Length: 226
Image (cartoon, rainbow, N blue to C red; front, side):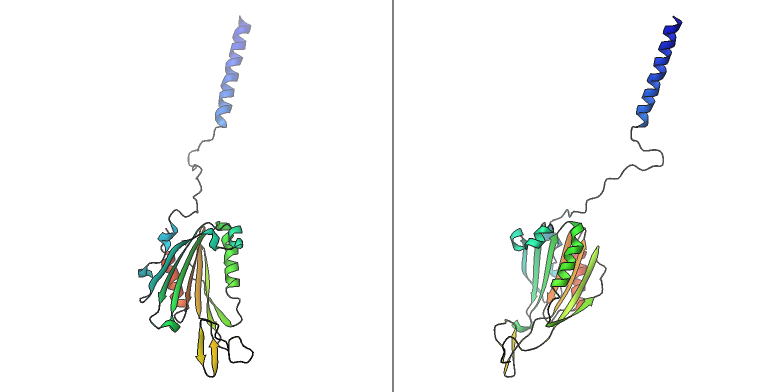
């Protein structure tokens, strides 16, 4: 009888210890210790069209001439390999100065994996400034979003293609002057910025292209991202 009582006591103690061990490995928040936080997604939760510049965001005199979504077939293989997700493009035009003095504002909105955006910005900056007949000046970082930067490009006037120096009228921007024609690229000003997985490029082309204008437009565009 004493042995049976002893064994019963031992079994009860073991059961209690086993229960305590199970309890100790169950995750729980201790007093003063915060519970695990679920990471917040950086993916955009609104339609890209809602990020487009509106007439109120651009200078007076500009008219909306394009506003549409872009599809995968419009981007190159490099963009696809870097994870291009979707895109939207908006264009405003100011033709008040005549056909030879038109200025356009082009806003391109795209989505990529956030980790790839620094590489994409590097490609954009290098390729778009690779013209020997233009001089480029860096726009100080406007401090928009996660990453931002930009440049202004000024064209060099000179004779267009033609060994005799008389020029060739093949360029749509050819300007008559003297005995021949001069082909001049339009001035450009561009600011790019990213926020999370969203990359935007604001580009002004024409006589109205300057750092102040394009930076102001970029700030207006950034303010539309929730």
